[in-house]
Structure formats: structure tokens, C-alpha cells
Length: 69
Image (cartoon, rainbow, N blue to C red):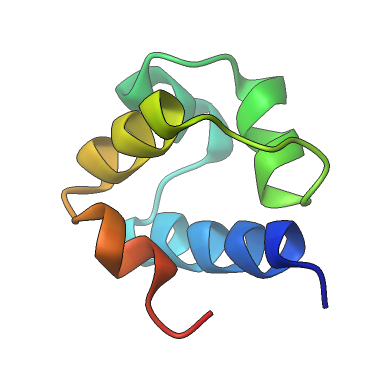
């Protein structure tokens, strides 16, 4: 499986652990919901800045998001 798809799957799992919708997660990260959806599906390749925003919104380190990929 492509790293973008594995990353998206992990990101979705972390979001769901928080009990958040994509829209709530996107709001917390300061991103658009359709962008978060595309990242979770492995369609978009997020930049380092976006990775930092996603991790910060989840309250985890960037390393944690990549753990187990």
C-alpha cells in the first residue's frame, strides 16, 4: 500500500479516536474539510507545515502520526 494511503488510514484512525468528524478535525487544524478528506484517502500529499498542523490538532507528535507505517 502506498505511503500516502497508509498515512491517511492512520490519520483517520487518530481522528476517530478523538470522536471527531472530518469537519471538526479540519476546523481544529485550520484546513478545509475536503482537503482533510483527500489526505485521509491518500489522494493529497501534505506538506511538512500541514503535517505539523494535523498532529498539533490531534495533540500528538508528528512522529506519532507516522508510527507503525
